[in-house]
Length: 79
Image (cartoon, rainbow, N blue to C red; front, side, top):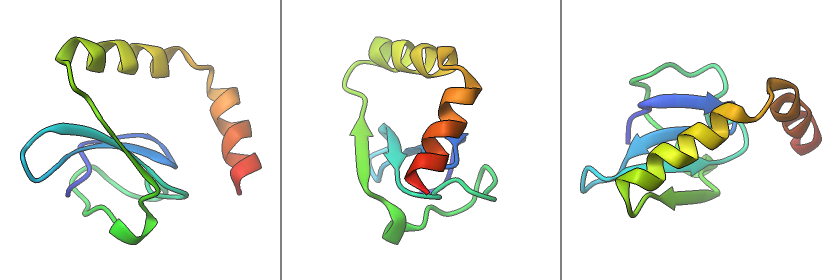
């Protein structure tokens, strides 16, 4: 899997082997990575699969509405 979009240090968007869009979560998974880098499978904790394309847009909108400070505090708590 290759990184398609970095949401934050712990959440990235990629595509599975079938070409289906998935969100992958894991501690530091997106840290110091770039789009196109290979996903470190040993860091993957959860994989979220989008069943309906409309749901994908809703999820991305929801994630975009979360204030950056909340994400930073969450990352600090996890670390």
